[in-house]
Image 1: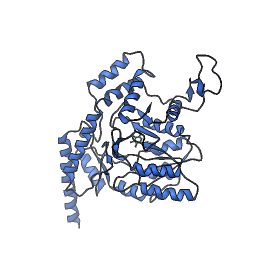
Image 2: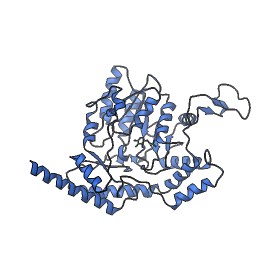
Image 3: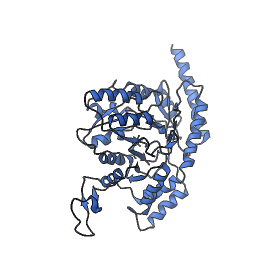
Image 4: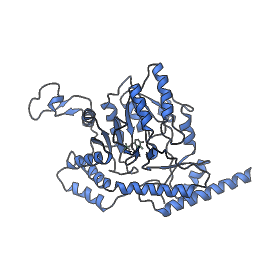
Amino acid sequence: MIPYARQSIDQSDIDAVVAVLRSDWLTAGPAIDRFEEMTAAFCGSRFAVSASNATAALHIAMRALDVGPGDWVWTAPNSFLASANCALYCGAQVDFVDIDPRTYNMSAQALRGKLEEAARCGRLPKVVVPVHFAGQPCEMAPIKELAERYGFAIVEDAAHALGATYRDAPIGAGRYADITILSFHPVKIITTGEGGMALTNDAKLAERLRLFRSHGMTRDAALMASAPDGPWYYQQIELGFNYRMTDIHAALGCAQLRRVDDFLARRRALAARYDAALADLDLVTPWQHPDALSAYHLYPIQVPERALVYQALWGRDIRVQVHYIPIHLQPYYRSLGFGPGDFPEAERYYAQALSLPMFADLRESDVDEVAGALREILATIDRRAVTLG
Ligand SMILES: *Cc1c(COP(=O)(O)O)cnc(C)c1O
């Protein structure tokens, strides 16, 4: 069986977790500080705030930016549900910006058009959430220009994109975003089991992220509404959550981050091997924007007769997946008024999308097996079409 994704765990990961279990701190301890420092250093950001998962990190990012009722948040329909749900958690309203048919990322051109219209009817977004789909960065320079012109904040959903670069800067360095969100779910670039991180260069935002991560509580007298009663004193100054990561997870994260360059090199080599092996087939391999270097969380292709191809690959124990069913077509979002035809590029892409197996421990022989299987399946479909025609 070839899964579409899988974590890579070695003895160094196991040893790191065991060491925490034997230590004094299972949560709020030194492994958290170390993981946050290492992630900030790797991504080139000033601050890193860990969280129990990326969905929680997205939620506190929205709250840190004061998103609430009456506000609009825009994201891409070709993403995981959490990119949009985080705004609804805050009582804000969500809208989507259609994708660029070449990168499957939020189209900067579609964003410009939608902003011009929104400016006319006074419904500009407070926050835009570009998603670096499959690990390929969005066109952040034009998106940042629009943010300055129209006054919205940018929260990058970089759940797929740890280690990706845009115009030679790592994703998370904050040149084009106010906050960047990472995920450490087992299918992502590195894993902590469950886990997430919010990166920012803004000290005030980092402070607010930490506040919302832990009940809206502070021990910092400078933030309190009144003078502390004594050294034991804390105050709740916002309605926060318990979204803390544990030291057990963070220790795994540190061990994984020490291996991230190998993971990324491996994914890029496997993607190049797919590119070559699939070049002459009747399918679309993932086009890369010259400004972007992908982390290759996914290797998404577009293939005609996708349902047949999906079935046939599963029949050979090759567990491909589909990323993504456009968020606006989910029943929950339809109940908010969205429907088919709203974002045609995302819908067109979804109709043919198929994510091939991609993870650091995937072998070259697995890539060759997947490519060979695709070649045979497409030939069979062609023959059947000829016979039926
Ligand atoms: C995985 C993922 C998330 C959510 O990450 P969790 O850590 O599972 O909460 C958010 N956005 C995107 C694009 C993702 O792929």
